[in-house]
Structures are given as structure tokens and as C-alpha cells.
Length: 75
Image 1 (cartoon, rainbow, N blue to C red):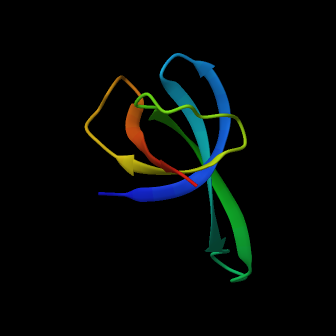
Image 2 (spheres, rainbow, N blue to C red):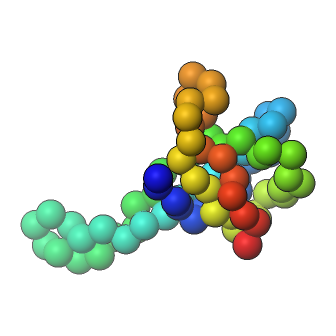
């Protein structure tokens, strides 16, 4: 099970938030560390989440077409 940490960007949808997960990855040729970010849709599971909250999300069965994560904890 994948567990990721990120920042909540949007809470406009019902029972869904958009979380941006940033990680550091070396450049293929120059080996300099770069920031790479990806956005995931996550289920709120009844939690009160606000924009710019730091959250931990975990992988789960598909909840909808492109929602495969659930919020585990608000940090």
C-alpha cells in the first residue's frame, strides 16, 4: 500500500480533495536534485480538511474513475 504526504490544494468537490505530492528526483544526465510534483484526488472520508493542510494519503481500491486514495491523517 502506497502512503504519500502532501498539501491540500482544493476542497471544492464533494467528499474529494486534490493533494499535491512533491518529491525530489535526480536529473537523468546531470544528477542535480529537482522537485517533481504530482496531483492526486483523495477521498475525505468525513474529515474536515481545509486548503494548505498537510495530509497523509493512502492507496485504496478505486472509489471513482480517477480517485484511488483516501486521507489517512491530517498532519
